[in-house]
Amino acid sequence: MANLIVRNLDKKIVDALKKRAVKNGRSAEAEHRYILEKILLGLSKKSFTEVISCMPNVGYDEDFERIEGAVVKNVFD
Image (cartoon, rainbow, N blue to C red; front, side, top):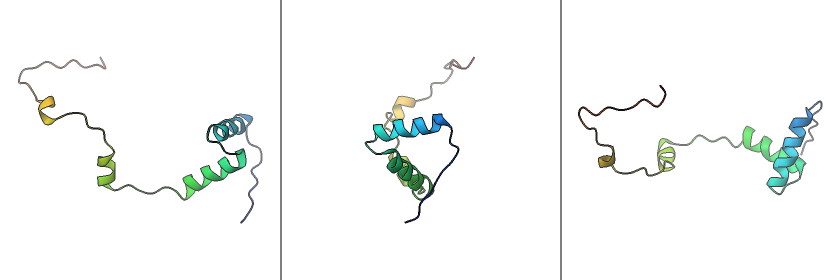
């Protein structure tokens, strides 16, 4: 295995890495390896079926019936 040295990191980044490592029960070095592996090698594209299967059940079609003449309030106004 190769070694990687990262220099000149902002203290906030190092502190965040250490905090995340503690939260995940790993050393800062192990957390760093985990992050690099997941970001660089762990990105797998999900199929459409996988994405749809992760969506929560929000009701039945009847729950979203359109009523003619109904006024819908725009929450962004």
